[in-house]
Amino acid sequence: MPIRNILLVDDSKTELHFLSDSLVKRGFSVRTAENGEQALQRLTEGRPDLILMDVVMPGQNGFQLTRSITRDPRFEGIPVIMCSSKGQETDKVWGLRQGARDYIVKPVDPDELVAKIRAFD
Image (cartoon, rainbow, N blue to C red; front, side, top):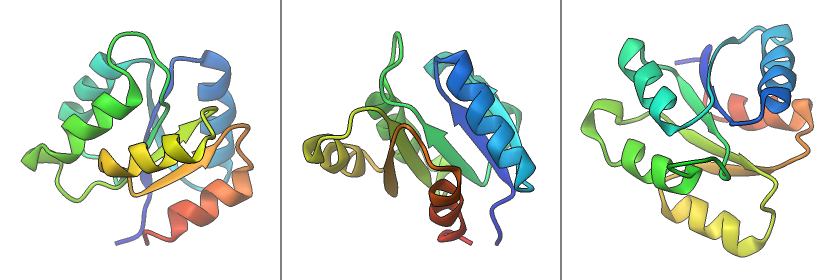
């Protein structure tokens, strides 16, 4: 099933705007959340095809949120791509161990991001 609807979770309004704009221009439908609580609310409002998750956020961080989403049977099968300025190999490994299916380092190249998203089609 092709990826069309993306939930973008990031506490930076600048990142939300940049990534959302980049994805919409490439034909995706994007909903946004600025923290873990909003992200969980968006998930109950409608099931996305993919989640793009920041790591560093107030409250529940992206690693914790990814772990809770990927272990929740209601959200089974929704791939999560971590998207963070934390670019160490240990961060990537930890993100994947929490259930993320891929990891991309900021600043994001929109074409690279779309290629990673399309890999799930």
